[in-house]
Amino acid sequence: MSVAEAVEYTTTSLAGHNRISTQALTSLARAAAAEALGVEASDIRADWTDDDGLLALSIVAPISVPALTEVLRDPRRVQGFGGSIWDRAVAAKARVLETVTRLSGSQLSRVDIRISGAQVREGGRVQ
Image 1 (cartoon, one colour):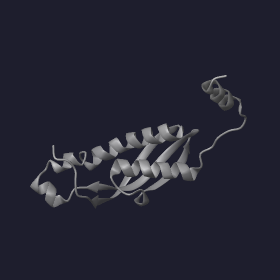
Image 2: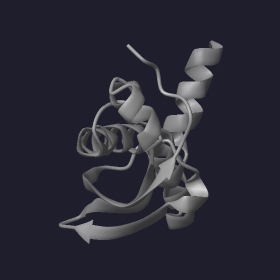
Image 3: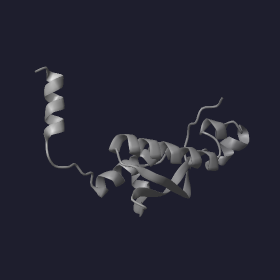
Image 4: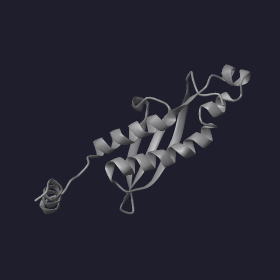
């Protein structure tokens, strides 16, 4: 028996089930949202609800933005941060959904994001 066959045999013949705790899913969702929105995971609140058997994720988080003085000096700073707050929130929904689904194997019906504030950050590429 090859190693691949042994691994397949042991993984398919074991009885039982695996579960990912709500706490682990929440930590994963917060990390994914933090990456997508450019803020710290500790600043993000994630809540789960049942949506006809699937998981619905609700995120409340601030978003990183360039300093307004930078934007006045160079409006391209907005694009360097990934676009408008609205565009970035829409893109973040898709990124969080994809990341949480891929890493956890859980089926999400939707991701709702509410932007709760803005955190001024340096950086962002000028294009």
